[in-house]
Image (tube, rainbow, N blue to C red):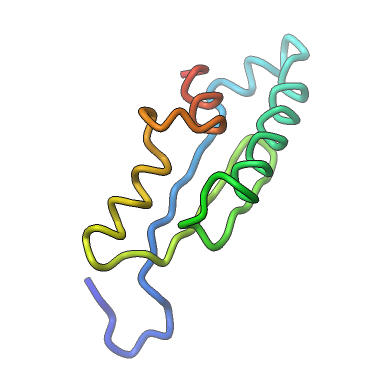
Length: 98
């Protein structure tokens, strides 16, 4: 649903979360995994995701935002950046732990 009076821009928001982080905390591995994910996310946000305008990192999560919602070819470009077939470091790192 598009809100006509909204000042919000349409966007694609992508969220990554490290799975089972509480379990990893019990073994002492959580902090090291989160630091590695943060480093990969920073690199990806700076260089690997040109279609995304914002990237946020906190604890065991990453949020990426793109305003490329139209036309469909632009949306596909955003999704291609995030796809596993693209093998970007952050998506590979997160999905390897699922």
